[in-house]
Image (tube, rainbow, N blue to C red; front, side):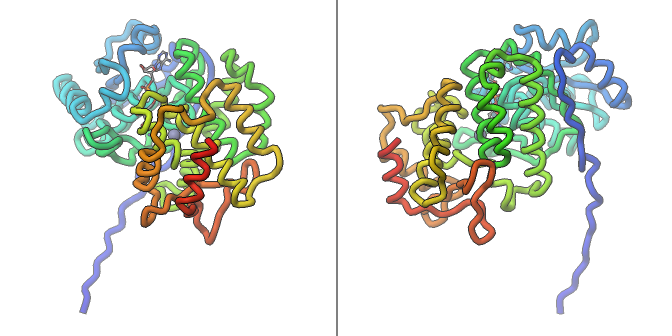
Length: 365
Ligand SMILES: NC(=O)c1ccc[n+]([C@@H]2O[C@H](COP(=O)([O-])OP(=O)(O)OC[C@H]3O[C@@H](n4cnc5c(N)ncnc54)[C@H](O)[C@@H]3O)[C@@H](O)[C@H]2O)c1
Ligand SMILES: [Zn+2]
């Protein structure tokens, strides 16, 4: 006999959240956050570059809000020690369960702050104000938070959806050019996997996007949030569909690691996107000129479209076989059948590709 008892978990309050996109709204957000989250004590997490760029001051104005400034900025600080420091800073400020964590910054700030919020007193809400092309397109939407261990990225993590996302595209004007361009690779990826109209738009307006024209940046952010949002809504726990967001990432992750993280994530993914395009040609999934269009847009972005010469192919193959999507060392790839249309085989979006075909592609890269 088996006794059974079912416990129903009530739907979480963060079941849905608004994403608001505009230009030059940092200064007015304060009042808006006060009004929308009146019952909460605010705690801001940001990094030193957001301070020197003037964005933190714009957000806070004259208000004295407890703030944690991550230093140094970037991935080296994305670890459990920083998360502990943030949590202890909240305790020292006598903050409790009625705290709203406000994350102002790129993906590293958002990931760390989101993780700290997810575990502080068993979870307090987080509001994301993303300030990089990566964060506005990708990390602020989707609810993945986490920090790295010495051995691997996002070793500690939680799905912790924000209560709101406010995107001020004016913050992008101070972002370093290389970061700005590399972050846009995820936008190109979104267009390739989900929306050929978006691809046409990027192709036709890339100069204006690179000039950081606000109305263009708003459109890009809107498109990205819609595409990523739809995928996340359909598959919040990454059971299947959400894997399509890994387009270009099987080889991209390997290239990023093999470069000793000299290449930015988006730069490595650009090479991975070209690799996926080459595999599509080999498997008869491509149409004439399709890969040339993708290569054209990535070249214009100024990101690499070929493997750096000094990358050892053997290391790459090993890394690809160890990719989290690999099954029995056969790497799996997300591929498209048409621009804006992911290839789905037997209900699966990540398809196995023979290792010798992968080696052949690496030779061509
Ligand atoms: N949670 C997710 O779903 C998800 C998705 C993609 C990436 N990520 C994570 O995001 C991280 C990368 O994010 P990122 O590329 O935004 O890097 P980042 O947050 O490190 O920012 C890059 C650099 O730009 C600076 N910066 C940020 N905004 C600025 C601005 N407006 N003006 C001037 N400088 C600014 C930062 O201080 C940093 O030095 C990685 O840790 C990655 O794992 C998470
Ligand atoms: Zn990525």
